[in-house]
Length: 195
Image (tube, rainbow, N blue to C red):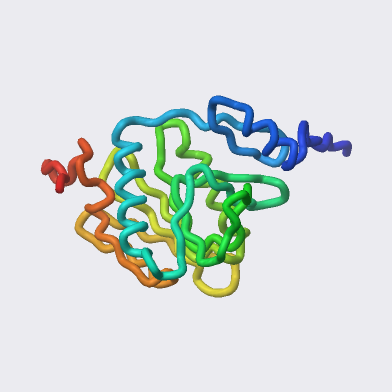
């Protein structure tokens, strides 16, 4: 049986050069650029809340929150730009890729469900340094936490709602899930979440 192999249209290095000249944001699927579509206002608020929570808790810890403009190399030449991630490795300011991410966050959008829940989950699972992958909902106040079970590639998944804490022991912090949804239009049990 003959199987056609997909050849890259550009290399990862060519992608970086190309992407810097674009007005829109792209990821690299190992073969070609993939446009990153816009989200909702709540998606943006959740991302900002996530950033604020990480930055305030990690200040002075030696770990640093990055994204969405810093890339992570996953499988082969694939480069992803998560909404946020944390590394505890020093990284040069001119770097295009960040080594050794520990925790990765993706905030879902209506068009990213399949990619974030399946494709990226498998890719992030293949990166040994990633201990936790957090998929944050953007249409309800909840998230799915994937935790690496051991040194192997298996993950345990847990759904956390607004009344829970998001444990991130690898970086020494916890975040109340409700904090990520502050000032959004999302509700839980009919009550708006707000600060």
